[in-house]
Length: 618
Image (tube, rainbow, N blue to C red; front, side):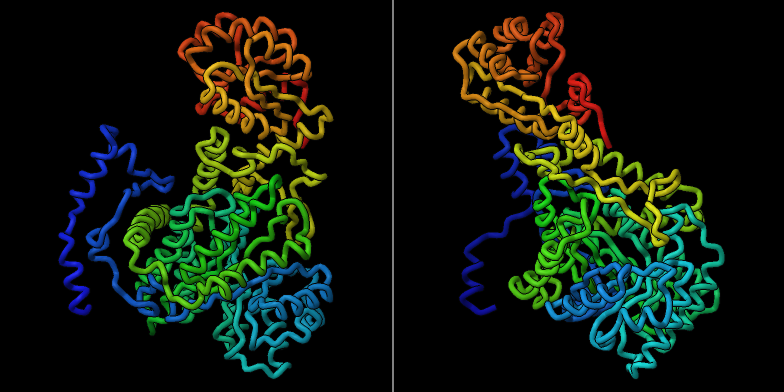
């Protein structure tokens, strides 16, 4: 720092954290500081309104590429842009892969059914694709994974590749089958040993995977996804080393697939905390070199928060998700196409998904800066908090006998499903917001014939949720079912806003009510205001309203509500927008329906659909 800068800063006396807090308390004008300013996360820890250098004292000051790799595995943040391709038609998959590679993709993922595994299939799939220049990843039917690995190694040798340069993964994850399909894979360590032998000459080909993304897609909180992923990885590491595989080799054959939620800053912190904790775990196995302590991460945008209605909002979600993973320094990222909820992604949707990452690299230049979040007191503090909470989950799982045991007795599935259900309940009450679904829906949108896409397993059979497995129902699926039921009924209900009285209150409550009913696909009719209850009731009847919502102030409801109800009770469902002090008296007069910020939106709309004779059809 030069002399002029030193003099400049000397003009400003240091401000303590206590002085900052005193100023905030003063500006709050008597409001409770803890309630107003401290945010309680779903993950179980508090987030403060501001952070300072002293908040991160004693935390790791390692540089990028240095153990414990908090700030990244290397000094470059150059993640791979990955696209995943189905291989039902091998020639089409090959053509698509080559097209994607010509347009900026640097990593490919192939999903391969067991019946397809053959030398001819591999040759056709990888024709004109240089395995030394592209990261290639394979998810194969678990029964044929070893066969595939042997055939793949033979193919690479036949092409004359330098096996030390080929990189990617064969995603073998037997415990995932237990979580997702309740299938127990006996003696999986024997399969792992065979895979390690088959890939022995390919040091950059990883063959043991932790698919923590399935936890994310089931609604897990960030600390749960991380804590269980660590226990999951440790289960495999312990099994391999117990079977005589050197710790260094075992660790270097592992890869983690994580999901990315829309919680931007916490996702950045999650990946930083993940590398830190995994390095500490691997270190306990005394590997021959520190390089083995690096966690290799592939990140994929979440399916849990994607929506069928207003699907273009999915692009906004996936863009922030990909950005957080890129900033966090993961090794590769897959962005889900915005339409993947309801159809096999179109060429347009896939091109947009691919371009989202190209923008982050070539326009935002996120790959030009290593660990841009490093030194941020907020993110460093989040990293520590997430690491602490995830470590508690890791230790608790180990005390139960390890991740495999916890999965076999259903503890993991129960914990994740409870979190997912808690989030769906929060969505129903608008404590969690899904833009375009439970808040600010597109009033005129229809499904255009779309419905949730059925998933199929590697054997070609439809996937169904079974007891004891992870429930991967998307966050907004119940709102979507409600809206689809309305649409398919062929009688779109009309919700009429009878606005009267105080201008500010009637407008605010009409806006709230329009969003409320549009979430079920109802036609909403807003109004500027009526001079009298009689005028408003007449207009509602003329509009053939199925629902009439009285929008006014709490004080005026005592005057307007009962007369309006008497005029409309035989002609429409009558609703009060708000929870006025006179609610009890209004209920005694026969008024049953009140909507406000504390009601369960989903249950209220489902009940209204039932009254209107609209049955759920999916």
